[in-house]
Length: 220
Image (tube, rainbow, N blue to C red; front, side):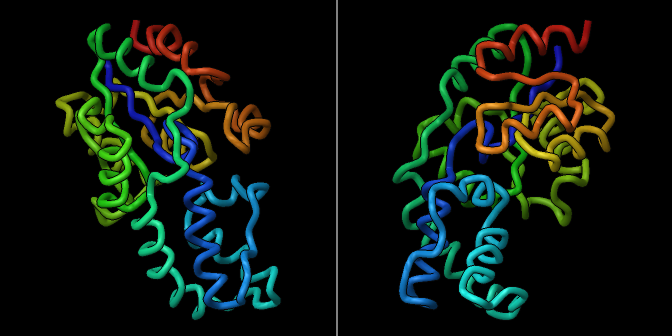
């Protein structure tokens, strides 16, 4: 059997509201008001610096990377304090994980969220133990789209990196899988879902119910 590796933000869980709240905490200190809105969920799922860059551009400070560097640790602190206030797992995510495991596949997480934050979030959501391994942005010296974090996640559950696939929601995930020479499945239920088809993954899913049958086609 193979190893199914999941991205976290925007794939297993909708973390956008808590990420936006953390960024806005920075902007309240810096600018006196919230700058980002729920419509910026797609940017939130690209990470803290992406949110800070967008917000800085809105307050007339585009390109102020020094201030972004100063604010980033504050964002992480605010996020860590309220990491699971609004975050929810996507419908069917854990049911799909259970189905994959019962079929004999191993499952892991490979995320560009810092490892400690990813572990904290999955623990608070009560599902960390359902995954055999978790590799974060700072687990290794490199992060996605470098293929090594994906391969490391597979190795940590005793799998063969050549017999794996990556489930994600972005060009980063598509490029990671391509670099590793393995299939990718991109979800279309996130804020950037309409853009996923253009990335030409091996498969697209609009609900996690669709995932287990697709995985079974990869290693026949």
